[in-house]
Image (cartoon, rainbow, N blue to C red):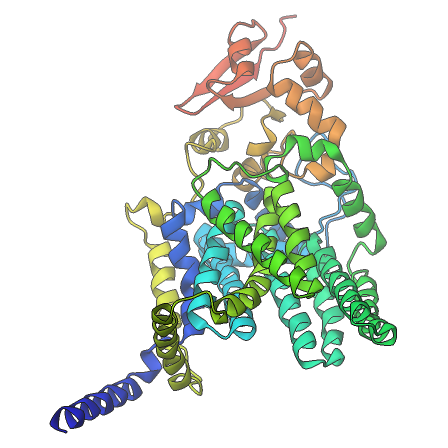
Length: 528
């Protein structure tokens, strides 16, 4: 009796302490929101991971141009090879946000905003997993796995919007399936308007709705009800049509759709751009994707057996797309978690597990349930606010901690060479050839002082021009003629590149600068 009294007193004291510290105690959604920060430092090389693609640079400067001019870009302003040519800046709204973040906190501000987007995406994944499986521990584990798999394509670029919007669409669509409330679908066209102006991946949302329409119809048909099949799919198809129409509310109207279709329909890019190619399973982040992929395929088989075709179609189609292209992996991760969650709920409830395992799992979930109930009605989320504030301070003052330095890596980009170019003119004007992988960084550092040969806007330059640039990069026999055609008078190259080796042996090019990573050549003017 005495021991029971003591235990009850300890429980009451713990409850009172929890109530007093309530505002400081993170909710499970708070933990989900902070997961991307933990994953960033655990599964990657730090905040610099988000700045390993130079396209971040031209996105920032596009936003600067829009803010300065008050107009949406219609023609190229960044290159000397395509200056004035029609350009579809399909991520213009994201570019404005990135420019504002950069003006506020530099590259650290851009990284901070990217982490915020990832945090909101994480919360959406977690809450949908809880809604589908009811197990909060499992939901957190799947959210962590999905985020870790997504790090393959974590870059501070507008494409981070698409996994977030896909997560929001999945929450709404799954809610419609659970509650049978089709009116929720009419929020999707409004979201599509925002999505179409933030990133060109808005068609993913339309494809998701169509998959739900097909899945709902297939389930109803197999149950023997044709009328139900049409009524269930009709709501989805109307919503898909509404989203398709809503996507035309962008500055470029139908030309945006034509541009995206032409870009994604060109096989050249899939052969030449690494993010369009299949994932390298030798990379250290691929193990997370492999684990999620195996769970998705197993869950798809389970759903097919149970005649839940919507989940099965989603899991199988996006597993294929994720294997086809690495840039689809973050979208696959978001879409796969709900279907895996449903299957895991049923797996854990089956008779295949021992009584001891079930008891342990129940006790673990009871602890998470207690934490969720005690923090259910709390309106303040002080813990993540303090964590974000600390993260922002560390980004602004990283000291010598490389893992916290929000900057372009010198080993990857011509950082010192850009400083040299900003301090003096070799010739006037400089018509600089460099790799399109460096072009975005040079725009960030040197535009409008200097315009580039090309950059990461491969959809704008087109396959023929991009191929010419690659031929120069690889020092093909016609490289000199291509540079002469575009009146190139300077070249910035990696020190160990084939073209740098060839230029060192030429009399019409002279080396004017070199550091550990880059070498700069200037065209020698012929004597008269």
